[in-house]
Image (tube, rainbow, N blue to C red):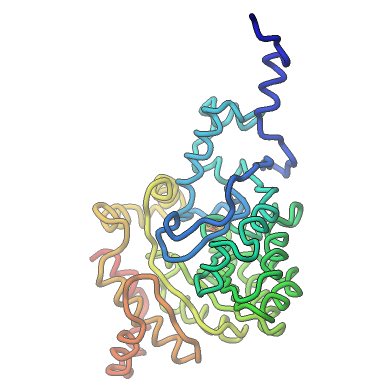
Length: 369
Ligand code: SF4
């Protein structure tokens, strides 16, 4: 017997599609029903758990390493016929490259807080693992305080759930002063868990920041956020990553950054030189050719056979940052594989060379090696 047709094909299609829940200039927001919100170390490959309340990021930094993941999300949505309107034309119709769709089509995990509450129900395996010392990092792939958060407050909802669970270790990474909106919740979490905020800042030069991170909050706004968090008693540090060879690595500029960060009250700085993989390379190298053409051939050489600059560059950067941090009373952490303590010992040995180290173009020339 033939099955009765309950819905027309058009209705079935509309039920499948991701609803558009907002638009802001050239950005479209979609409601996405996430199946999980807490990614374990087996997925992050980094020894911690991660939460990303949004897929895609409207800040649009030229060097963003997270763009590659968006490609797969969009492809899966296209294959499952879940995109509609502008997204369907942009992505399905090939009108927009995936690296740009990352900034313009943002998926909002509206069920994130509810999903987290279920995942962390008291006595669950996940809650036990986290209460025994594992870390949760919020904002590893996209910024949890990007403009969408002002409207949808998914990150705030997630923090509210975390505030109900004692004994956790949580970190938040962001470029946005919007994080200060949640100072009350951060303080509540800090009463029975450890929580820290890492503010990403690679230059204090406003004009330069505009060229590299066109839609992100200004460096001054981020420095004010650091001061506000510090005043509120929230542990706050700075991620000076990625250091962009030939662009943000001038010793004088790095010293200005370290000085301002220390004044604002951050406890330490983490540094790491630019890594270029996947979609990031496709976006960043043409960006360099257009915005910094004088650097294009040096970048092509330096990144021809590797995804990061060579040992010489990274070692000099590490030694310089260690000296600057010591001079301004900050601790330094590294994601470049160098050992901050060894770098400190090396810098003690030839501290008299600091003036020479700060000679113009020292690190920048290292790019050509
Ligand atoms: S803020 Fe972070 S996630 Fe967003 S575009 Fe910039 S680097 Fe990428």
